[in-house]
Length: 347
Ligand SMILES: O=C(O)CCC(=O)C(=O)O
Ligand SMILES: [Fe+2]
Image (cartoon, rainbow, N blue to C red; front, top):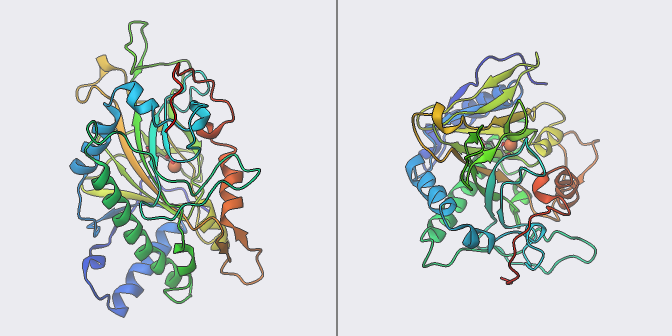
């Protein structure tokens, strides 16, 4: 269960930069992670082993989202562009007509080295389809994003070993989860809200009193590693029902537990509700005109992975079935997005 925290804790994971971890370090870090994941379910991580910084990752996000709309829509998932084959990876546009509490556009990639399977009969979403990319002449960031994915996957795997130890298991206890992992790297852009009618095409017309860039939710997978820019807006729900701001802390990334890991841990870890406020409209803002950028990495097992909870008597979960069930609640995956693209080309 989450607690009545008033700020997210900070965990220094600098020791993970060393090639060989001492047993005492494993012990210390796994205890620290256990403490935060069994209370807030969320923390800032500092001194991570990642080789890239915020400037690089948000440079890539900015480069992607400033592409012309038709170039982004060329990558749109089938639910936003019926002529396209990609159902799971690719671009989704802002959909104010569908959900005024989810005002964001996004671009998602899976494992760049994965082998791909054809769609499963009767399933509308192919979880193991290939990535789609903008033309190289328009977007130079493909290779960098692929490397970013691989580094985040490796870092998340280190954390997973520590979580296994923290739950009294061997460090490799969850290693089968890494086979054909479905982890997702998602670039997100939250356009600023705009209250008057002179908005341009990239701004969002606010239709509710409480505009949301991202509706309250828990993440579905193992854990999420989040890069956020300095705009702010992320809020985490504590046990008293208060939304606690989780602003950017310099050189940190945010980590949080997903539903699957909460279940596997027998409820020892908590998947905490969070949301993102829509960035303030232009006249109120002093900095960036484009709104907020964030880059969550959702660490996930493979589609066919049979996930066995740590308490022997609890029921196993097939990850593909778990994620499909959760997806039914996401606006990005609604059957008919109603998005009118006016184009028909296929990828
Ligand atoms: O943009 C953020 O800071 C959080 C996004 C998020 O919670 C999500 O995509 O699941
Ligand atoms: Fe989330």
